[in-house]
Length: 255
Image 1: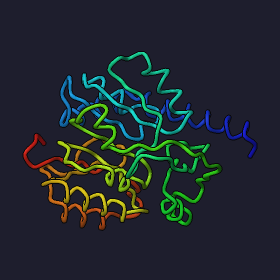
Image 2: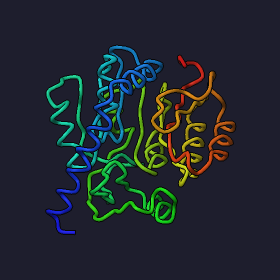
Image 3: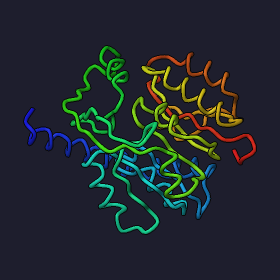
């Protein structure tokens, strides 16, 4: 694919994401209700893997301040259009990983939301049902920061959302202190990543966990569960469940 062709394909993918993630008011209401469990007006939130900023928009509707981190130039241009004039949103064009440096992204021009820095995720997707049609057609070297570095620059967040397509464990490897609450995406093609995330959080603090499947925007359990129970639940999910978000809260914080 020519560079022009890739650019046009990427913009079509971004427009599709804008419609999908910003165009459904019922979804916005459900998302805001979920996030209010973890955030209050004036709190600080990190949106790691912000893409086109639907979570950032939800955090702002709640009244939280946001640091939105996104490594891809196309989505970042859209983030600047949507949030660039908002003084309570700080935009950071970078990947997030275990340490500061640079990293290579595998770009999916047609579906930029599944761009990844994880070679293992690409290998898992190659032969998986529902993923075989995806094409990562180019690479891009980008700056990389860490959660510790972001906290040092912007303060301790009340909530961190992490959605980076199989690189979530690397993001948590760059965190050296417990956070009040966070979420990380899991996929059924890379359950080992979720396992490492659970292990890392267990090292950091006494966390309890809940789950939201796909884009349901609601928690699966009436009460949070321990890491072992969450690990067993994720392992038992059918492959067709595909993805979702695990929510983690310190035992002494609000649910």
